Length: 206
Image (tube, rainbow, N blue to C red; front, side, top):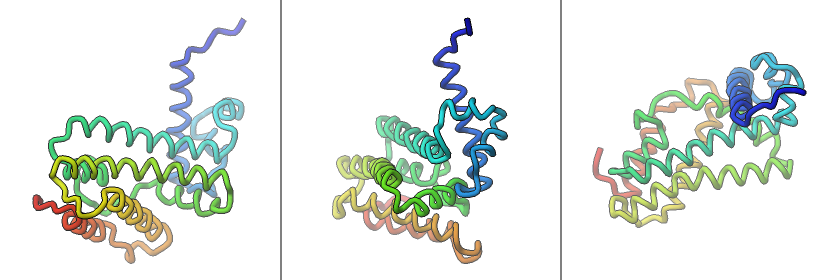
């Protein structure tokens, strides 16, 4: 009789597969990545990968979902402890340093490929909408909490400001993916976004 595999072992194996997949997608992009590439990177057999993911689309959705859900959970945790919603908003947008830099999310190009090439696929459109709503909710929660506390102006609806942030980063990712590097000023454009948000939210602190 085969030994019973623990739930923890299965979760860890799945996490290891996702970690390997992220590295491959970052290197090759979505379209050029195959399940074989992920098998080789993870050091598993075909059955070892297909036990968890039915195909490349299923695998990439799992990658995106895990990253976004982790971000949503971390934001909820930080909201409970926040002393400054402005600093929290910057942290959600730019990471721990809370300041823009010249780097883009290395998975952004693959995400664009995934959604643009599948824009006419119903399953992918439904998933894209779900992912958009979750991403939007992360920013909206922080902005609305800041408005409720009085730290942010409520001149603009919190959700509208959140949509502007999502649109900015999606557009910047698209430019970064298709234009020569010198034509996309990631840091400068992101700093302008920060200035815009200060005005929109009535933030006077630096």
